[in-house]
Image (cartoon, rainbow, N blue to C red; front, side, top):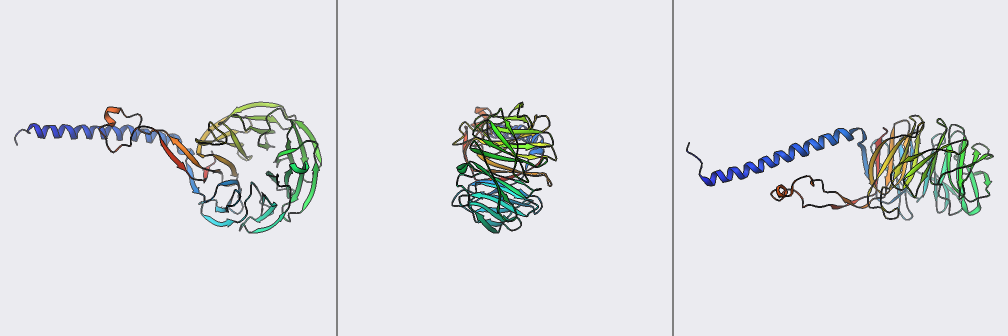
Length: 372
C-alpha cells in the first residue's frame, strides 16, 4: 500500500484526536463515576416514589409493611408497600401529622377536622374526634395504647385511646404547648412549650412526672430512653442539641444541615435521623436536602445522606432497617457535571451539554434508604 495523502492524514489526525478525547472522557469520567459509586454505595436509595400531592406527614408500620404519606389540604395521601414503594390505596383525608400504633393496628392522623383513626392494614378511615384546629403534632406510646396530641388553643395536652379514638385524659398546662415526643423505654411523654419548660407526663395516666428546663431551642424533638438523651432540633439554625433526659442540661451541640425540620429514632441501632433543608431560605428551599445519621449514645455524626428538595418528614422501621424521607420537591440548580473538561476540548465535543449549571425540577417524593 502507498503512503496516505495529506487529506487522508488530516482526517486520521482529526478522528484520532476525537478518539483520544473520548477515551480520556470515558477513563476520567468513568473512573470518577466508579469512585463515586464506591463511596456512596452503602447510601444508595432503595427506591424513590414520586407522589401525586405535596407531602405533609409520614409514618411507617413495620408489622403490616406499610408506609403512610398524607398530603396538604385538598390532596389525597397514599399508603405504600414498604418494600417496593407501590401505591396500595389512597388516604382520603389530609393530615399534618401522623403516628402509628402497631399493637392497636391504627394510624393516628391530625388534620383540620381533628384527630382521625385509620386502619393500619388498609388505610380505611374509621372516625374523627374534634380537637383544636391548631393541633399539628402527635406521638404514640404503644405499650399504654395512648396517643398524645398538644392542643395550643386550650393550653392542654390531650391523651387518646389509639383503638377507639376516645379522649381518656387531658393535662392543662401553664404555658402554651408546642410539640410532643414519647420515650418508649420509660413510658413517658415529653411536651415542650413556648418557654424553656418541658412537662414530662406518665404515658399511662397522663400525670405530671416532672418539669425540665430545656436549655436549647424548642424545635422538633425525639427522646431515646436507652441512651438517656433528648435530641432537640434548632429549626432556625444548623444544629441539634443533645440533652440529658432527666436534667435537661445540654450535653453536646451537634452540627447538621441548614434548617433541620424533622427527626426519627432507631433505638435498636442507636441512631437518630435528622432531615435538613440545606437551603439558603427555609421558606423557599432551592437546594437538595440531607439526612444526618447521629449515634445516639455519643452524639457523633456518622454520615450525611443527600435527599430531594425540601424534606419535611422522616420515619424509621426498626425491624426492616429502612428509613423513609418525604420531600416536597421544587426547582433546584444542578452544578455542571462536566465542568472539569477543559474549555478548548469541550468546544470540540458537540455531544456534551453547554457549560454552566442547569435548573432541574424535583417532584414530590418518598425515598427509602437502607439504615446505615
